Image 1 (cartoon, rainbow, N blue to C red):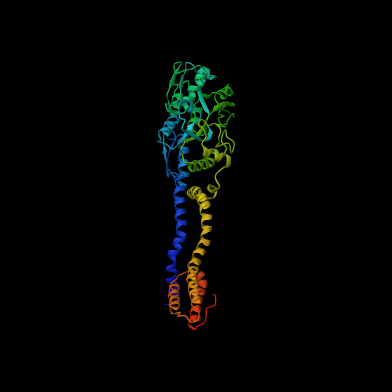
Image 2 (cartoon, helix red, strand yellow):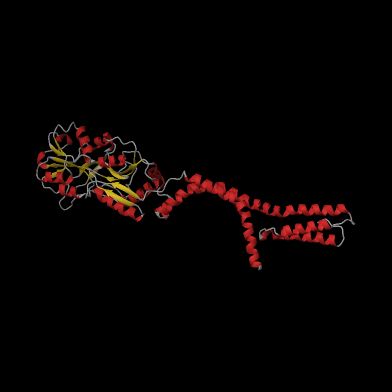
Length: 441
């Protein structure tokens, strides 16, 4: 057998020994890994449903932007058009939507304790468009008038009903019509309405089209601070003269409005990593200045109807996690989940594996040292027999001992003590054959 083949054969013979040493530690580590894995949160879903609003509306258009941004991170988003915020809340409650745009102020009309807010996104002013000839100066003047407050399921309707109720106006006190945005604008244009409520972003086309109607004007809410005190989800805004259209000077004077905020709402068990990703996207989309917003005002933890989620709290307190700042979403999430496994596992495995080298060293040396006991016993027999005794049995024992030690397999690092043992056996046998009393090894 060549030296190379001999070394290979020797290494093969030592593998079972190594397995006996390292095996229990590896099995214990795997067991700890399996147990810890049960406490790790599952990976984020790769598909979610985003409930928006009517097709062509602000929520729907923003939904398409979120869909495109999330697609870049490997998240497939179904943008679901709805009639508005109330329907969105019901979809979240039934588990038919994962995320939804919800207009501030609509939570009071539903019982949804399991929902959580992620952030408010932008102001949605209450635009009350009135006919100029109707001589309407306050909301209280709407009593007995023909009013459009949008369809059932929209977020406009509960806010309109709330403001009307603050002024003692109920659905029985006038003609309350469930007309959507475009239908209400057309009815105003045709003279079939005295007033219409819109709760929508200033960028919505219906705002410009309604304000462009010659005999329609925007009502300035004279007691706006009082409404905001009564309803904390409302903010007081001022629309400057000419802000909508400088050339046509629309509006013709500064106009005071009240506004809830558009918000993102999820279920209480929505995945925190995905919530953080959506908030990062919201910061990119909604942090720019607008007609009423300063740069960086949104997304915000203010103006929320539902309790803020724990993931959103962490985001607003500390920003995106370090991993999400520098790594793709899925890589960051995988590392974040693995660290929950690895930290306790390292705590267990590190001291365990530190014990393995000295244990292995003791095991290898004990395989050699135990043969010294046999060698010592043979030497004692020889000394006890005296100089003229027959030592043939002891020589045979030494031959058997040498044969057994020759079959002993140890790693190369322990070859020196093995060869020392073999030399001691050979030395004792030579002394016996030459008729000398053995010297102590």
